[in-house]
Image (cartoon, rainbow, N blue to C red; front, side, top):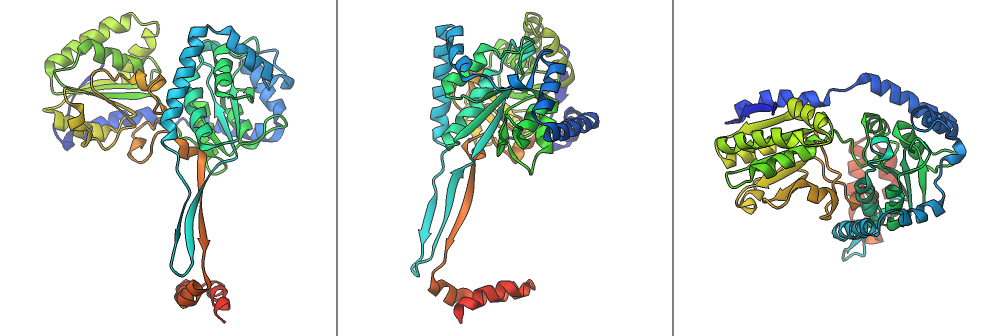
Length: 434
């Protein structure tokens, strides 16, 4: 398999690897300009702009009156999918919900002896907009993305959730998206895709009410639209292409490692799949497995391009040096395919999700385990985290000062205000001590 052979022995080897990976995130200024125009158009023309873009790119007969999916169609979709699939979806939703319930934060208060009360009030945002890609022609719907984005918003207590997804050529949505929405208790679904859907959720139209937070994956047009809306609405993150790093020792199964690398490579030609190991024999066996397994994949062409451009097997002198390499790579997904993963966990500082041991392949987290699969990419995990309940909450500080507090500290507060040249600030406090 045509993926890079690299060596990392010490920090001097990092700059060359970093320069190679940096090319994955070269900005496309043409997309920036196109998206800016789409946002302005939807803000100005609303539903008509949405219908026009949808006719052009998704469904030739689409009309503005078709934007909202009837609630009865959402409920009816459950009967269109096999009962066994519905049961799997129910269980996945429950597992994700159980995990996220542990993330809920409580408001808190402290009371001083003089009667002053200070605290923090945690509240959900009022309204959230979720984008769900339709997949290839609407036939490979990202149902797991709907679950991963909707559940933490629901756990946060968000009372209003809107979902958008591009229609298929016949103007319908895949029944699996609708059935998943029904299982989640979501009833507000719109047929709109790409940057125009993101614009509608942010600005609002006659049909779609504006949202406070936007979340959900998408192509470069969706990601660019979200990035251009930062400051107007909250967003989950601006995610790049998927990535996996596997730190493996001689106890790992090369067939399993190759399968795990390919699980990311099949996403996108820009996806990165990297094996880090001190075991030269394991590296050679994984390379051979990549050839064999990739040839048998339906998405072999995509996976091959991904591995050729952004795949690598990095040889390190030992596992501790491999952990150092992992922290520099700061991957979205990290598998510790070693005999004793728990002994390594403390040395991992930068990874979006960490999969422990030989029986925790990355897809377990993508679909079923419970932790969120919406994760930072392109080394942004150095300062950001997985999507969580907190993305859909906001916090207000609460200050209830007592008369004795103002009496005791007023002069100090006034002095600080005057040091900054803000006389009215100082007098605001002093008025209460006259």
